[in-house]
Amino acid sequence: MPRTKDGEPNPQSAIDFSMMEDAVGYRLRRAQLAVFQQFNEAFAAKDLRPTDFAVLLLLSCNQGLKQSEVAEALGIQRANFVAIVDGLEEKGLVERRKSETDRRVQALYTTRTGAEYLNELMPIWAEHEERLIARLGGTGERDQLIHLLKRLCD
Amino acid sequence: MPRTKDGEPNPQSAIDFSMMEDAVGYRLRRAQLAVFQQFNEAFAAKDLRPTDFAVLLLLSCNQGLKQSEVAEALGIQRANFVAIVDGLEEKGLVERRKSETDRRVQALYTTRTGAEYLNELMPIWAEHEERLIARLGGTGERDQLIHLLKRLCD
DNA sequence: TATTGTTATACTCTATAACTATA
DNA sequence: TATAGTTATAGAGTATAACAATA
Image (cartoon, rainbow over all chains, first blue to last red; front, side, top):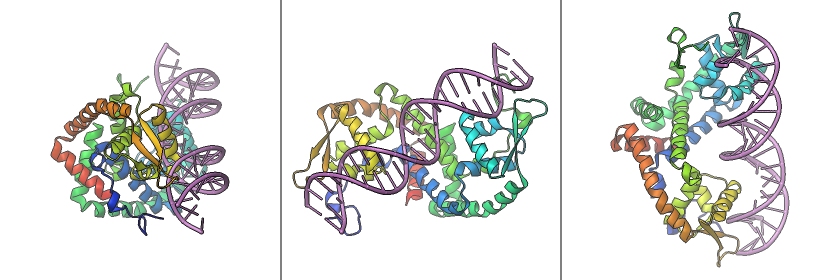
């Protein structure tokens, strides 16, 4: 027997959640999961993860960055970044070119296909951000949130 | 040859990060990782993960909750929650008791040891939250952040 | 010697299906 | 039939060490 017909919490045994409610870390995690899920739903037809999108976006404004520079900028360890670039390269969206001046480094570029693909992605992303802004209550609230989140990272 | 002597970004080839800077999802993820890392550093001596702490905290105010109720409240699938309770039970912090009225359910309780352990954890947690409040600029900013994060989750 | 990219590996977290015992 | 807990398993994500090529 379900507690209520549609699975809502039963008020008779409501959980005291007051401690967790305002825990910064807990709230951050729940919000991040919700936003990433919304991102994945918006990009479902595009078969692209948040990280893939971030790499494309970053490279589009910074052609020729070192592989390790992109990894560090996104907070990904260089060992784990290899497979991400592999995937983007297999899709033809990104290209590795050995640097002429330092044969150790792989310089990364978006391909023509990658640039066109990003052009298709941008309106989806803009709409995604607009939906978040609407939830937050407006661009002022969004700016406030970004400001506070940056403070947590130093 | 490193780009600068202490690994700081080289201004000559500074990355244009303007796109990512204010992406809500990206900022949320970086902030969440930073806060969880700080949590883990604060609790390093206690060998306790954020989730373990949340379970203890939740049970301390809600003795006898069903295992699946705790899992759902914390956004963890019941299948994955089994190992978490196993760990807490092996440490003697939490106890499973089969419900008398419904033999299917495991009611969860903090043990005496668990309650005492939580008493030791609370000041560490309070200090952790205080550090976050300081970073944010005060309790007003913390409340503002929590308010905005809740909106993102509905 | 130090750095870049790479491979291998292990560990955590998460998602899904299927089983059991109860209802 | 449906639910609570469990098991097994596969897929991500993450962390570390070591290696080859190059500086």
